[in-house]
Structures are given as C-alpha cells and as structure tokens.
Image (cartoon, rainbow, N blue to C red; front, side, top):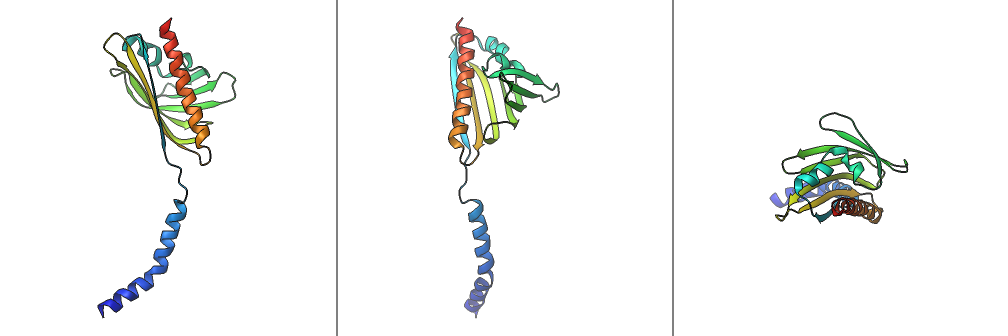
Length: 172
C-alpha cells in the first residue's frame, strides 16, 4: 500500500519535476562565469606620496592614459564619469568603499562600453618597508557571453597601462 502511494506520488509529480529540471538546465545551459583580474607594481615612493597621486577619486585622469576627462558628481559616495581622450567612450563608476588610512578605494561600473556586467574593483597602496610601495589593482566581472576574450584583454590592458603610468611618474 505504502509503495503504491509513493509510486502514484512520483508519477503524479514527475512531469512537473521534469519541467522544473528542464527550465533550470536551460537557464544554466551555457553559463558565463565571473572572472577575476589582479595586477600590482612596486614603486619607489612612500604610500602617502603614491596615495596623494592616485587616491582622489577623479585623479584617475592623471594616471590612466586613455582617460581625457573625469567629472565627479560631488555626492557621497561619489560617482565619476570618465571620458576617453578621443571622446568616443564614457564610463560611469561609483565609489563603493574608501579607506584613506589604508590607502584604498573600491568602485563599480554603473555603465560602460566594455562587454561586462557586475564589474567591481579595488585599488590599494601598501608599504613595502624600504620606503617603497606596492600598488595592487584587482577586480571581478562577468563577461558578456561570447566576448570573454575581448573583456579580458580590455580590462587587463587598462590595468597594465594605468600601473605602468603610475610607476613612470615615480621613476622620474
């Protein structure tokens, strides 16, 4: 009797269960997984000197080569709009965390021409102990499906260019 009840229960709900499983599988059939990136560079300067160059939220226009202009909205937390030097692209980013004592801030894309969603990033300066500093820039994002390589190349290129420019400023 008990086995018959279980068999009827399974039979009655199997079509519904199968449809649910099919729906779940179709949603997750070809997921695009989140990606992470991290770059760092050592510079011959104290963290406070490095932070004075890169810490202000709109100072990015002074050390990220493609950026021609940065407009900050003056709100708390601030939002900045970065416009490329050629004027062809704009990025809108909001600061999500800031710790001046630890020389770090985090931000997220609100809008971007890059083929990514859920982009968040942190830039941080730490002391090396010999009067030098390490600048770490890390981020995570979800690339648009089919654009994984383009997203990775673009973001890695931005990080590399920015850190190289900061290093060059302290090498003079």
